[in-house]
Amino acid sequence: MSSVHRVKNSTVDGQKSVEFQNVSFRLADGKTLLADLNLEISRGETLILLGRSGSGKTTTMKLINRLLDPTQGQVRVEGRSTLEWDPIQLRRRVGYVIQEIGLFPHLTVEENIGVVPRLERWATERIQERARALLNMVGLDPDRFAARYPRELSGGQRQRVGVARALAADPPLILLDEPFGALDPITRREIQVEFKDLQARLQKTMVFVTHDVREAFVLANRIGLVKEGKMIFLGAPSLLLESNDPEARAFAECFHEAGSPENAR
Ligand SMILES: Nc1ncnc2c1ncn2[C@@H]1O[C@H](COP(=O)(O)OP(=O)(O)O)[C@@H](O)[C@H]1O
Ligand SMILES: [Mg+2]
Image 1: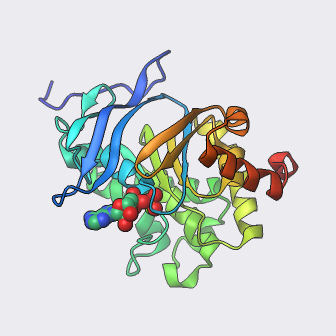
Image 2 (image 1 turned 120 degrees about the horizontal axis):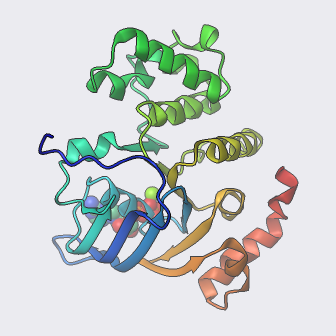
């Protein structure tokens, strides 16, 4: 057995995928971006981080895949502190979908999807097969899309490829940071519904960031509401609607104005 600690991918009852234990993150100038966060995310759960822009959602995500280290407390992934994980090993076990930095422009769709499998030294044929299977899974015909470059795709198609890429090496944990933020409302709704089906089939642990309360309600097992670096609510979506916290109520009002997401299915 190598020194690299292997953790099985299978869902184990009650096992935690991610834990935040008294986690704070401060900048060198003392500014606190995240304060005393405590949170447990179970295997197979989809946790939505909801909050206004600038509230600390992306910072929370970066602490999970070790793009940032906590200045206090610890973040544990699969039972081990992120400080004990080799950052590269960790990132290969954590799929990451981001809105802005997206796909490599000089790589085809198939090559983009194959980035992590290539790092993992999969055989070329296996990478191709995996890419094609994933394109099918996210609703893109591989014969039409595998050889295209990102600039030859619409925004919605690029997002689908981004999701496929994050799933490529079958990581147990997927982080999605406003993945559908740039889409028009119709496409966004379609992709949300498809994503929900995908989520049900894959049973991955997912942490999904959004400022869109409707999106949160479509996808969440639980919602964590973040305000100014603090998690002020954590619980089932229905409980968010009943909360007396002013920020929770502000989001609940947006939800009521937008109408029930039940219509989305
Ligand atoms: N490296 C940094 N230096 C200074 N301020 C930062 C840095 N990273 C994030 N911030 C600030 O921290 C706050 C939280 O950022 P972020 O986690 O990206 O928010 P969100 O993703 O919820 O929009 C914001 O006010 C942001 O401007
Ligand atoms: Mg952000």
